[in-house]
Picture (cartoon, rainbow, N blue to C red):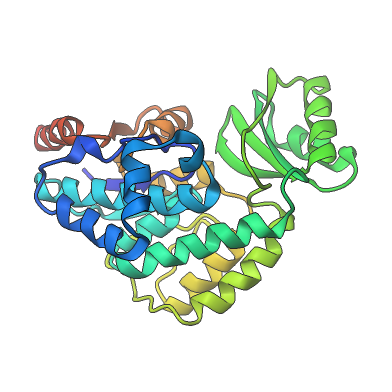
Length: 309
């Protein structure tokens, strides 16, 4: 048995997502640390909403980091072993770095809030867009984007059946229509405020470079497969460079999960709220054992699953 933990990004958030871990040793302390750094009103937003405020990028990114970290604290407290491999989807890579001991939670919170602001400011509201293309192969999605005119790019390779495109609003619309013409089952516009991971995010990456220069990153205790290169980087400089490029580069999730499999991973557990990554992992490789660690009960069940192997 070889365990990997994966951490979700934006889209998995929900009001009250920390409540399922209540009472687990260490969870209260983690929440108090987030409250100290981000303020009591932010924690009230996580617990009580409103949902439309939580869904603002500047709030969602630190919220998901907090939720993923709390889930990991609960996992370890309830007897879950340290993983041998970690990864995170987009923003989730920052949570994975915290779990791997490369980045302090106290440093990660203001870092991801800065990242969110930089990404939001890179493209004026309403000028960018993203869409999920269902059931069309990678080459045809890329073809549709290249034929659309303007900036439209394949940015999230989530599963063999789902590729997300992003870029200028009109170009993404034309690319979506072209994908349908080439045989896609559907093209679903996503309710996001910026074209994440497209080349339009390069200004955000450069702002991140300046901020990261002041952040202490240590070599991870466990292997972390990054989004941008699908490689395990261990030096602080290489990790920072990958995070800078990640902002404006595709999330290569299919390759990430397949790379884990080649490293001998047998179990991939989603550490945080929701089951988005669990579904993706199953669509990428059905032989991998999966579990979602969204609350105390699911963590206890997953721990028992590992003990039975």
